[in-house]
Length: 120
Image (cartoon, rainbow, N blue to C red; front, side, top):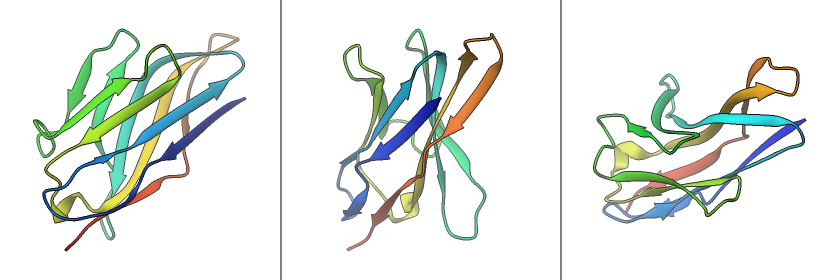
């Protein structure tokens, strides 16, 4: 069983920073990648940042240079640092983990989401 839990959302002023967290707990699951998605009201869910098992990162153009995702030491916790936040960053942020089950099947799991609101 795999559980994905996000935390760290909240209200921040434009230009401010916020650090989210995604913790993955699993008995038998090989994590291949972590993806951070967001969904604003009336819009489709979009991928904003990802990190692979070996640490390769990728970012959407809209957040490149402002967001940075890293792994917390050797724990199954990934923290996207979001700087220079804009009102258009307001959304529910979701963490997704993709990997292999104990039987070798590919699977992915979602967290419940955390709200980020950028407003003065």
